[in-house]
Length: 347
Ligand code: SAH
Ligand code: SF4
Image 1 (cartoon, helix red, strand yellow):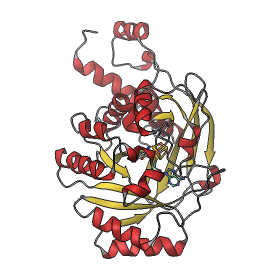
Image 2 (cartoon, helix red, strand yellow):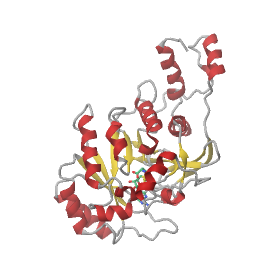
Image 3 (tube, helix red, strand yellow):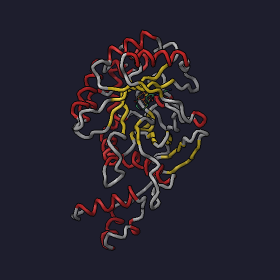
């Protein structure tokens, strides 16, 4: 608009730090500039259709996007931290065999605004924009609906805004992108952002991973881990580790030999391991890992020297746990051209 750069920072602070969506209230801008902004732009929020609170403090929002489909966003409080689990697409095209989102099919990518709006709406809902309020959300994970790397440009812009000091100012260690392994996009990610990374591995060998994550047939484990190592190497702070996510499914990938194979596989990947007990949903043939198998699996990895955390199941009374997010997806058949190209070679 030919304005000085600091004007953009002023507008960003109004919207993302103070929660103001009306240009008229942006009082440090001239009346003329406010009028021009009103002519050219609007700050529009998607509609919150439902807000649900779990007995354990988890909160879930069902949010309707333009076009009518809904996505879900989940807030999970854990001792002094508040993690917001954000969606990147309406549905998901990758059809992992254990994931409710995948079973819903794919509708469309979310825009940058729709991704950032999830954080804005959560902060608003907790009163975090009020003067002197503490920020309810300290961490963001892109682990909601969708595969973030298949919506590359919008996701990169959104996470960069979340980490920008003129906007939400979240630490780059506290914003995490989770991917099932879209290797070509992961290969170029470091050129655009230094967000933290989580890899959805779930299996220690290709034969098993092919069954759980169909994308593995196109980008097998060795390529995925190589790409992960390269991403970490390119980060400005070279001590960052990736999180390896491993969803434990009873009798499928939870045996001691899987843990031992995983320990060898990850030996040259700077990482910590997050074990996720599988969360069942209607119509899925898998079962949750038993406590005995979970602890046995964890022990083998701990003894091999890994940092291993177990993700406790949160919010399952409101279907907000990992893999239970399904939203309400219209028009499942309209897949992106990019994915049509991809799925052609997977199946
Ligand atoms: N598409 C991205 C991010 C969303 S899924 C990805 O796959 O990484 C976020 C995490 O939840 C992933 O690790 C995914 O594998 C896991 N997940 C999916 N369904 C699950 C289920 N039913 N139980 C437990 N974890 C699940
Ligand atoms: Fe998509 Fe991730 Fe679910 Fe796989 S696990 S279907 S990539 S959302």
